[in-house]
Length: 217
Image (cartoon, rainbow, N blue to C red; front, side):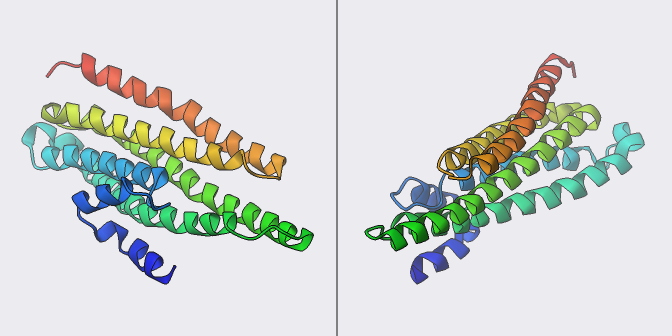
């Protein structure tokens, strides 16, 4: 376990090739949640790309201050999502360990149930944070699409789509874990939180995509 935790701490330092190889393997982490965070970070980076291609252009001087502010938010968001790649893996390890606890005696069964419930709560918390971050990414993509260089509109659209996919993937990770929770009221509250984010921001990402595909250069 010590060796595995050391590896997880270094997840975001891996090359893309090595990270994908780990994702394809049989280890419990990284998994879907970490991959969602990485895709969301790519979406934030694409939005920032739009801003970088806009700053300094005379045609967009009137919105340069707005773009610079968007770039600051986007950079912070990308770094936040990069950190959530690691956080998701670390949150899953206690859950994987909880499943392996013995349950031969009533005492062991009660202990396992309590540990598992706490681990499930933690395993839901990070995907929910990924979801919230991806919602911000969709909002940023919309603003970049409205104010950024027309030469980079496709990148703003891709940013929205990447964040939408990551949002949905993280939402799935929440719901998979809540199904196993004994506290059904808590599970319902977590599901409702995730569902609200999906209901608001999946259509928003779709609107951003549609608007950008209809714009002319």
